[in-house]
Amino acid sequence: MTFHAFIAGCAGLELSPNECAFFKEARPWGLILFRRNIDSPAQVRALTDSFRDLLGADAAVLVDQEGGRVQRLTAPHWPVYPAAAAFGQFACDDARLAALGARLIADDLRALGIDIDCLPVLDTPAPGSHRVIGDRAYADNPADVARLGRAAAQGLMAGGVMPVMKHIPGHGRATADSHLELPRVHVPRAELETDFAPFRANADLPAAMTAHVIYDAIDPAHPATHSRVVIEEIVRGEIGFNGLLMTDDLSMQALDGRFFERAARSFAAGVDLALHCNGDLTEAGAVAQASPVLAGKALERVERARAQVSAAFAAAEGFDPVEARAELLSALAAVA
Image: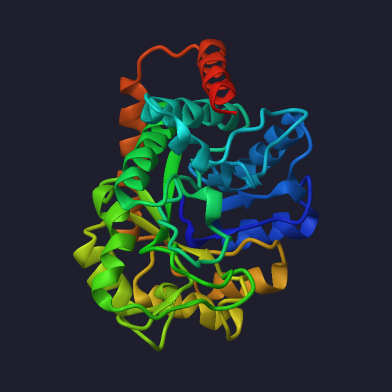
Protein backbone atom coordinates (compact mmCIF):
# COMPACT_ATOMS: atom_id res chain seq x y z
CA MET A 1 0.00 0.00 0.00
CA THR A 2 1.22 3.51 -0.82
CA PHE A 3 0.99 6.20 1.84
CA HIS A 4 1.78 9.88 1.94
CA ALA A 5 4.16 11.11 4.61
CA PHE A 6 1.74 12.70 7.04
CA ILE A 7 -0.42 11.90 10.03
CA ALA A 8 -3.89 13.40 10.40
CA GLY A 9 -6.52 13.82 13.07
CA CYS A 10 -10.28 13.40 12.88
CA ALA A 11 -13.08 15.44 14.38
CA GLY A 12 -15.23 13.05 16.39
CA LEU A 13 -15.99 9.57 17.63
CA GLU A 14 -16.31 8.07 14.17
CA LEU A 15 -15.10 8.97 10.71
CA SER A 16 -17.50 11.20 8.79
CA PRO A 17 -18.23 10.62 5.10
CA ASN A 18 -16.03 13.61 4.25
CA GLU A 19 -13.18 12.26 6.36
CA CYS A 20 -13.49 8.83 4.76
CA ALA A 21 -13.32 10.38 1.30
CA PHE A 22 -10.33 12.52 2.29
CA PHE A 23 -8.39 9.64 3.81
CA LYS A 24 -9.03 7.39 0.82
CA GLU A 25 -7.73 10.06 -1.55
CA ALA A 26 -4.90 11.59 0.50
CA ARG A 27 -3.74 8.30 2.08
CA PRO A 28 -2.09 9.54 5.29
CA TRP A 29 0.30 7.08 6.91
CA GLY A 30 -1.33 7.56 10.29
CA LEU A 31 -4.26 8.79 12.36
CA ILE A 32 -3.73 10.45 15.75
CA LEU A 33 -6.46 10.33 18.41
CA PHE A 34 -7.40 12.88 21.08
CA ARG A 35 -9.99 13.04 23.85
CA ARG A 36 -12.59 14.25 21.34
CA ASN A 37 -12.20 10.89 19.58
CA ILE A 38 -12.52 8.68 22.65
CA ASP A 39 -15.62 7.46 24.48
CA SER A 40 -15.52 3.71 25.13
CA PRO A 41 -13.29 0.74 24.25
CA ALA A 42 -15.74 -0.56 21.65
CA GLN A 43 -16.07 2.86 20.04
CA VAL A 44 -12.29 3.44 19.84
CA ARG A 45 -11.73 -0.02 18.38
CA ALA A 46 -14.42 0.62 15.78
CA LEU A 47 -12.74 3.93 14.89
CA THR A 48 -9.27 2.43 14.44
CA ASP A 49 -10.71 -0.49 12.47
CA SER A 50 -12.59 1.87 10.16
CA PHE A 51 -9.41 3.84 9.47
CA ARG A 52 -7.54 0.66 8.53
CA ASP A 53 -10.47 -0.56 6.46
CA LEU A 54 -9.89 2.52 4.30
CA LEU A 55 -6.08 2.45 4.18
CA GLY A 56 -4.96 -1.09 4.91
CA ALA A 57 -3.53 -2.98 7.86
CA ASP A 58 -0.19 -1.11 7.68
CA ALA A 59 -1.77 2.25 8.51
CA ALA A 60 -0.66 3.54 11.91
CA VAL A 61 -2.77 4.86 14.79
CA LEU A 62 -1.14 7.15 17.35
CA VAL A 63 -2.06 8.70 20.67
CA ASP A 64 -0.43 10.81 23.41
CA GLN A 65 -0.84 8.54 26.43
CA GLU A 66 1.82 9.76 28.82
CA GLY A 67 -0.04 9.69 32.14
CA GLY A 68 -0.61 12.66 34.39
CA ARG A 69 -1.85 15.75 32.55
CA VAL A 70 -1.45 14.19 29.11
CA GLN A 71 -3.68 11.15 29.01
CA ARG A 72 -6.25 10.75 26.25
CA LEU A 73 -7.65 7.46 27.55
CA THR A 74 -8.86 7.85 31.11
CA ALA A 75 -11.51 6.86 33.64
CA PRO A 76 -13.98 5.28 33.74
CA HIS A 77 -12.86 2.88 31.01
CA TRP A 78 -9.09 3.08 31.47
CA PRO A 79 -6.75 3.43 34.46
CA VAL A 80 -5.28 6.78 35.39
CA TYR A 81 -1.48 6.64 35.12
CA PRO A 82 0.99 8.78 37.05
CA ALA A 83 2.90 11.63 35.46
CA ALA A 84 6.48 10.85 34.50
CA ALA A 85 7.86 12.83 37.46
CA ALA A 86 6.30 10.32 39.86
CA PHE A 87 8.80 7.68 38.78
CA GLY A 88 11.69 9.89 39.85
CA GLN A 89 10.39 9.78 43.45
CA PHE A 90 11.03 6.09 44.00
CA ALA A 91 14.11 5.23 46.03
CA CYS A 92 14.71 1.99 44.14
CA ASP A 93 13.40 0.04 41.15
CA ASP A 94 12.35 3.31 39.53
CA ALA A 95 13.29 2.12 36.04
CA ARG A 96 11.41 -1.14 36.56
CA LEU A 97 8.33 0.80 37.62
CA ALA A 98 8.60 3.17 34.65
CA ALA A 99 8.80 0.15 32.37
CA LEU A 100 5.83 -1.51 34.09
CA GLY A 101 3.70 1.61 33.73
CA ALA A 102 4.49 1.84 30.03
CA ARG A 103 3.92 -1.89 29.55
CA LEU A 104 0.46 -1.54 31.07
CA ILE A 105 -0.27 1.41 28.78
CA ALA A 106 0.82 -0.71 25.81
CA ASP A 107 -1.69 -3.39 26.81
CA ASP A 108 -4.45 -0.78 26.91
CA LEU A 109 -3.51 0.60 23.50
CA ARG A 110 -3.05 -2.65 21.60
CA ALA A 111 -6.53 -3.77 22.61
CA LEU A 112 -7.86 -0.67 20.83
CA GLY A 113 -5.80 -1.00 17.65
CA ILE A 114 -3.41 1.82 18.66
CA ASP A 115 0.16 0.90 17.79
CA ILE A 116 2.16 4.10 18.51
CA ASP A 117 2.38 6.12 21.73
CA CYS A 118 4.01 9.57 21.78
CA LEU A 119 6.04 8.72 24.87
CA PRO A 120 8.62 9.11 26.47
CA VAL A 121 9.15 12.80 27.10
CA LEU A 122 12.94 13.21 27.18
CA ASP A 123 12.98 16.94 27.87
CA THR A 124 15.03 18.11 30.88
CA PRO A 125 13.30 21.06 32.58
CA ALA A 126 15.50 24.04 33.40
CA PRO A 127 14.88 26.53 36.24
CA GLY A 128 12.44 29.19 35.14
CA SER A 129 11.11 27.21 32.18
CA HIS A 130 7.42 27.07 31.25
CA ARG A 131 5.36 24.41 33.03
CA VAL A 132 4.16 22.96 29.70
CA ILE A 133 6.78 20.25 30.33
CA GLY A 134 6.91 20.30 34.13
CA ASP A 135 5.92 16.95 35.62
CA ARG A 136 5.79 15.39 32.17
CA ALA A 137 9.58 15.08 32.56
CA TYR A 138 11.01 12.15 34.51
CA ALA A 139 13.53 14.26 36.42
CA ASP A 140 15.38 17.57 36.42
CA ASN A 141 18.70 16.03 35.41
CA PRO A 142 19.54 14.48 32.03
CA ALA A 143 20.95 11.20 33.35
CA ASP A 144 17.72 10.23 35.12
CA VAL A 145 15.58 11.53 32.25
CA ALA A 146 17.55 9.32 29.86
CA ARG A 147 17.42 6.26 32.10
CA LEU A 148 13.74 6.41 33.03
CA GLY A 149 12.68 7.44 29.53
CA ARG A 150 14.50 4.46 28.11
CA ALA A 151 12.78 2.15 30.56
CA ALA A 152 9.38 3.51 29.49
CA ALA A 153 10.25 3.07 25.81
CA GLN A 154 11.30 -0.50 26.45
CA GLY A 155 8.05 -1.15 28.30
CA LEU A 156 6.03 0.08 25.34
CA MET A 157 8.02 -2.00 22.85
CA ALA A 158 7.70 -5.11 25.00
CA GLY A 159 3.95 -4.58 24.70
CA GLY A 160 4.13 -4.19 20.92
CA VAL A 161 3.69 -0.40 20.81
CA MET A 162 6.14 2.00 19.14
CA PRO A 163 7.49 4.76 21.40
CA VAL A 164 8.07 8.29 20.09
CA MET A 165 10.59 10.28 22.14
CA LYS A 166 9.88 13.98 22.37
CA HIS A 167 10.64 16.81 21.87
CA ILE A 168 13.98 16.48 20.09
CA PRO A 169 16.46 18.16 20.55
CA GLY A 170 14.87 19.45 23.78
CA HIS A 171 11.96 21.57 25.00
CA GLY A 172 13.03 21.78 28.63
CA ARG A 173 14.48 25.32 28.52
CA ALA A 174 11.54 26.89 26.73
CA THR A 175 9.92 29.76 28.62
CA ALA A 176 6.75 29.67 26.50
CA ASP A 177 4.18 27.04 25.57
CA SER A 178 4.66 26.16 21.89
CA HIS A 179 0.96 25.37 21.62
CA LEU A 180 0.39 29.11 21.98
CA GLU A 181 3.57 30.89 20.83
CA LEU A 182 7.06 30.25 19.52
CA PRO A 183 9.61 29.71 22.31
CA ARG A 184 13.18 30.97 21.93
CA VAL A 185 16.10 29.52 23.85
CA HIS A 186 18.88 32.08 24.29
CA VAL A 187 21.58 30.12 26.13
CA PRO A 188 25.08 29.52 24.70
CA ARG A 189 25.59 26.43 22.57
CA ALA A 190 27.58 24.57 25.24
CA GLU A 191 24.68 24.72 27.72
CA LEU A 192 22.41 22.90 25.29
CA GLU A 193 24.41 19.70 25.87
CA THR A 194 22.19 19.12 28.89
CA ASP A 195 19.13 19.16 26.63
CA PHE A 196 20.66 16.90 24.01
CA ALA A 197 22.02 14.28 26.41
CA PRO A 198 18.85 12.19 27.01
CA PHE A 199 18.19 12.01 23.28
CA ARG A 200 21.78 11.03 22.53
CA ALA A 201 21.58 8.25 25.14
CA ASN A 202 18.43 6.97 23.42
CA ALA A 203 19.37 7.62 19.81
CA ASP A 204 18.73 3.97 18.95
CA LEU A 205 15.01 4.21 19.75
CA PRO A 206 12.64 3.87 16.78
CA ALA A 207 11.04 7.32 16.51
CA ALA A 208 11.17 10.93 17.68
CA MET A 209 9.11 14.12 17.50
CA THR A 210 10.60 17.56 16.87
CA ALA A 211 10.41 20.62 19.11
CA HIS A 212 8.81 23.83 17.85
CA VAL A 213 11.59 25.81 19.54
CA ILE A 214 14.18 28.27 18.22
CA TYR A 215 17.71 27.77 19.56
CA ASP A 216 19.46 31.09 18.97
CA ALA A 217 22.92 29.57 19.30
CA ILE A 218 22.23 27.09 16.45
CA ASP A 219 19.68 28.64 14.08
CA PRO A 220 18.16 31.95 15.23
CA ALA A 221 15.88 32.15 12.18
CA HIS A 222 13.96 28.85 12.34
CA PRO A 223 12.35 26.57 14.93
CA ALA A 224 13.85 23.08 15.02
CA THR A 225 10.94 21.64 13.05
CA HIS A 226 11.83 23.93 10.12
CA SER A 227 15.60 24.05 10.56
CA ARG A 228 17.83 21.95 8.33
CA VAL A 229 20.73 23.03 10.51
CA VAL A 230 19.12 21.66 13.67
CA ILE A 231 17.92 18.44 12.04
CA GLU A 232 21.07 17.64 10.05
CA GLU A 233 23.78 18.91 12.39
CA ILE A 234 22.19 18.26 15.77
CA VAL A 235 19.44 15.63 15.53
CA ARG A 236 21.02 13.43 12.84
CA GLY A 237 24.61 14.52 13.53
CA GLU A 238 25.57 15.29 17.11
CA ILE A 239 22.73 13.38 18.77
CA GLY A 240 23.09 10.56 16.25
CA PHE A 241 19.40 9.79 15.81
CA ASN A 242 18.71 8.09 12.49
CA GLY A 243 15.23 6.81 13.26
CA LEU A 244 11.79 7.93 12.14
CA LEU A 245 11.40 11.68 12.68
CA MET A 246 7.99 13.36 12.79
CA THR A 247 7.05 16.95 13.45
CA ASP A 248 5.15 18.10 16.47
CA ASP A 249 1.65 19.25 15.58
CA LEU A 250 1.77 21.68 12.66
CA SER A 251 -1.41 23.37 13.86
CA MET A 252 0.30 24.70 16.99
CA GLN A 253 0.61 28.48 17.18
CA ALA A 254 4.39 28.35 17.49
CA LEU A 255 4.49 28.06 13.70
CA ASP A 256 3.43 30.66 11.18
CA GLY A 257 2.49 30.58 7.51
CA ARG A 258 -0.11 28.63 5.61
CA PHE A 259 -0.35 24.93 6.27
CA PHE A 260 1.13 23.93 2.93
CA GLU A 261 4.16 26.05 3.82
CA ARG A 262 4.43 24.66 7.35
CA ALA A 263 4.55 21.12 6.00
CA ALA A 264 6.81 21.95 3.04
CA ARG A 265 9.34 23.67 5.32
CA SER A 266 9.37 20.62 7.57
CA PHE A 267 10.16 18.23 4.74
CA ALA A 268 12.79 20.61 3.38
CA ALA A 269 14.43 20.60 6.81
CA GLY A 270 14.63 16.81 6.78
CA VAL A 271 11.69 15.35 8.71
CA ASP A 272 10.12 12.09 7.58
CA LEU A 273 6.48 12.70 8.57
CA ALA A 274 4.30 15.77 9.07
CA LEU A 275 1.83 15.67 11.96
CA HIS A 276 -1.44 17.60 11.83
CA CYS A 277 -3.75 16.99 14.76
CA ASN A 278 -6.83 19.19 14.98
CA GLY A 279 -9.05 17.37 12.48
CA ASP A 280 -9.69 20.43 10.28
CA LEU A 281 -9.92 18.94 6.78
CA THR A 282 -9.10 22.21 5.03
CA GLU A 283 -5.82 22.48 6.91
CA ALA A 284 -5.15 18.76 6.59
CA GLY A 285 -5.72 18.98 2.84
CA ALA A 286 -3.00 21.61 2.55
CA VAL A 287 -0.62 19.43 4.60
CA ALA A 288 -1.47 16.48 2.36
CA GLN A 289 -0.64 18.49 -0.76
CA ALA A 290 2.82 19.27 0.61
CA SER A 291 3.49 15.71 1.77
CA PRO A 292 5.44 13.41 -0.53
CA VAL A 293 4.76 9.75 -1.07
CA LEU A 294 6.33 7.81 1.77
CA ALA A 295 9.40 6.35 0.06
CA GLY A 296 13.19 6.23 0.16
CA LYS A 297 14.88 6.86 3.50
CA ALA A 298 11.60 7.80 5.20
CA LEU A 299 10.03 4.47 4.25
CA GLU A 300 13.16 2.64 5.34
CA ARG A 301 12.93 4.33 8.72
CA VAL A 302 9.27 3.36 9.07
CA GLU A 303 10.10 -0.25 8.29
CA ARG A 304 13.11 -0.28 10.61
CA ALA A 305 11.10 1.24 13.45
CA ARG A 306 8.37 -1.33 13.09
CA ALA A 307 10.92 -4.15 12.94
CA GLN A 308 12.47 -2.92 16.21
CA VAL A 309 9.10 -3.02 17.94
CA SER A 310 8.21 -6.42 16.51
CA ALA A 311 11.52 -7.86 17.69
CA ALA A 312 11.09 -6.46 21.20
CA PHE A 313 7.51 -7.75 21.38
CA ALA A 314 8.55 -11.22 20.22
CA ALA A 315 11.37 -11.35 22.77
CA ALA A 316 9.30 -10.12 25.71
CA GLU A 317 8.74 -12.49 28.59
CA GLY A 318 5.34 -13.40 29.93
CA PHE A 319 3.47 -10.51 31.48
CA ASP A 320 0.74 -10.49 34.11
CA PRO A 321 -1.05 -7.13 33.97
CA VAL A 322 -2.85 -7.73 37.27
CA GLU A 323 0.39 -8.31 39.15
CA ALA A 324 2.09 -5.42 37.34
CA ARG A 325 -0.70 -2.99 38.19
CA ALA A 326 -0.69 -4.09 41.83
CA GLU A 327 3.08 -3.54 42.04
CA LEU A 328 2.81 -0.09 40.48
CA LEU A 329 -0.08 0.99 42.72
CA SER A 330 1.74 -0.27 45.82
CA ALA A 331 4.83 1.74 44.94
CA LEU A 332 2.79 4.87 44.27
CA ALA A 333 0.97 4.51 47.58
CA ALA A 334 4.28 4.27 49.43
CA VAL A 335 5.43 7.69 48.20
CA ALA A 336 2.04 9.42 48.35
